[in-house]
Amino acid sequence: TGPMIQRWAWALGEAQQDPEVNVVVVTGAGKAFCAGGDVARMGDGEPTALDHKNMLWEHIHRIPKTLEAMDKPVIAMVNGVAVGAGMGMALMCDVRIASEAARFSTGYVKVGLVPGDGDTYFLPRLVGGAKALELLWTADFIEAAEAEGLGIVNRVVPPDLLVEETYHLARRIADGPQVPIRMIKRLVYQSLRLDLRTHLDLVSSHMAVVRETADHREGVQAFKEKRPPRFTGR
Image 1 (tube, rainbow, N blue to C red):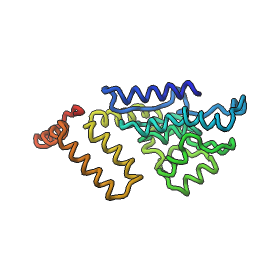
Image 2: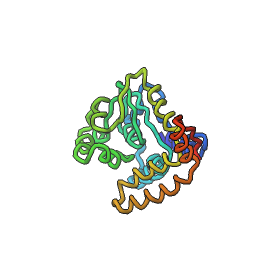
Image 3: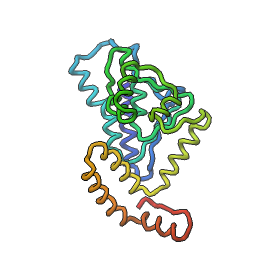
Image 4: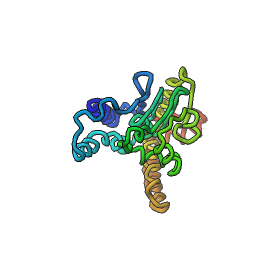
């Protein structure tokens, strides 16, 4: 719904600005991760084509654009069904940890729509063009294990271990050196749009910056002293 999308965009903005937040975890509040739009209400008071386009641009598309701009790691903890916009939400995140109970479907084509929130952008980058087209054209449900095999999710765990496993990963990342972690995220996504020479030029610039950080010095010292590093994010 519109209010939920606005709250989510606000929450993401707050997380990005909060210096105490190093990692964001996104999950569903009930049995489903997200079941997508309310199909039963589709067709009620339909807006004009231009109004609908503007609604997508001003509201729905705020989420993928906000996530793209966020340099902090975002983990989707997929606790159940992810359909349509729900699958899109998971795809927008950097990493996806799924329960064995999770199921995925692009959904849109079954109600005569094209994906409205970026599935056609994110899915091919994970599974390749041909498989993305198959999943988008058929909207067939795929189980968590198949999603893992396709590269849609990073890991599948038993339902009772989902929170533990997800937060274990989140804590590992949150306790790491934050400057290079955020730079690595930028570099990976920028590499999808840049030629090798330009990308390596960015790498050399980023390397020059991180070598001046306190966390780099701490990491080197900890290695020499054979102890775990104590990173501070600086």
